[in-house]
Length: 393
Image 1: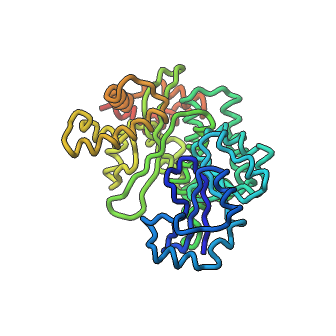
Image 2: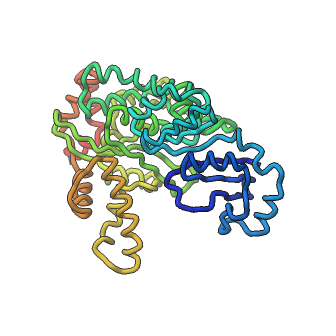
Image 3: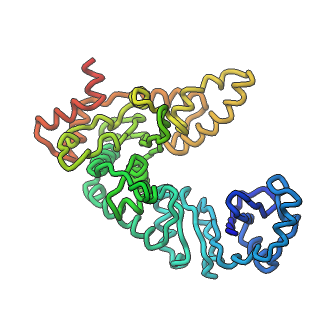
């Protein structure tokens, strides 16, 4: 039997134990370290510890008769979500217990602070938003963050503006040719930044995770867009960015699809002078994706703009939708650092920000600052942009 231990301060249910028969897994959830350590001394489960919603009385009795029920209690890794550095379990770290820290909610800088803390040793593993479903050890975590910081040195040395930094990352990542993992390989090989940095496999989710990590390191305001396919099981992934750049007077929300602009193969020379899917207004990107049988999935921006009219109604359907609209709006305001007065005003602002064209001269300045080109190559690059096509219509 697999034993999973979770310490989560947001846990509200009083019952600590749940058994999942399909996985043959016993899950123990504690509100804090103190509760967990108290249970460690007691080392006993009773029927009152189980959640009767998930487990029947007969099932619980059968479980309690098992002699191996808590055999792996000392060795089972402890899963702990870290919402801030104050959540770091110092006492457990000092005891050298096996711990898996879920750090996706921390800022890039806070994660750097955490993984270089002397208390963090080889007994600690990590789950991060850049590593897909992979749990990685301290050595790989350090390597991943050190590599990203090293790659960004040029941006910092040249003091690139937000738009220049965004183009630099986009141009850097699109040099990686799309390369799926083999059928017998772990999907993280092409999706987890830790694996991508060590190999040559990368797919759309990998480009997205890499871009997110670079962007977070630079405090760029970015979000992930997942796309569902209408015709096949596999979906797609890309980036949405709120780009505010005083140097170029840019203030808008745009989509970036590195995967679609990436190097096709070693003979591909066209991608160097193409920015077809760089800084595309979201509504245009949605239209392009729909022509390719893709629809937005789990995207706060598209969900809000498609359903915001429910905020103005009080029928049963609208009441149902309001809750989800507000939830996604709060998340988007946090992601893009928007501090606006009302929900409706925020939505109209989001709509306006997502419909802004960038002047060709501005695009040329950004490109030439980061990747100097001949006049012919520069014009070819500009001609591939939505912003050029928009102005020529």
